[in-house]
Image: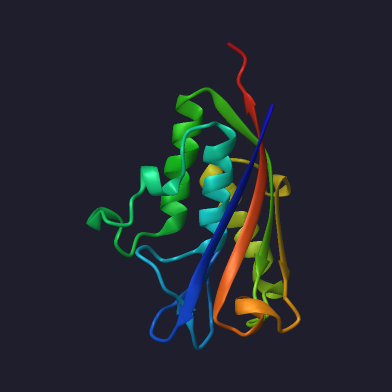
Length: 159
């Protein structure tokens, strides 16, 4: 078994959709980035790639490559799942936390769990998504951006 950790952060800006865990969330601001800037999915991808010692999302999906301009991060997560399987790994579970002051995410978490699980072809029960605020502290507490952490367990398939 191997453990991986991922972290991502993006700035909140006007004129962009807010996508978290593959779910569009109604809000006046969205996350700025080369792709759809889904910090939750990006953290999950980095955790998975890190656990397998296969680099990071910047290596596999560079932000200077126009193929990924505006990309749907869930589709990129599907690619990460394929990469893992090609290298002989299966996903055991994922635990993640989104850090933002606003908007409240509670009602959207079930959909996030389902989208992540489906992209990786694992059970929804193997995906945990939590949300927390920073009580007004730091960049996320001031509403300047959103961050996410993810940890995962992957297993080497029997040969």
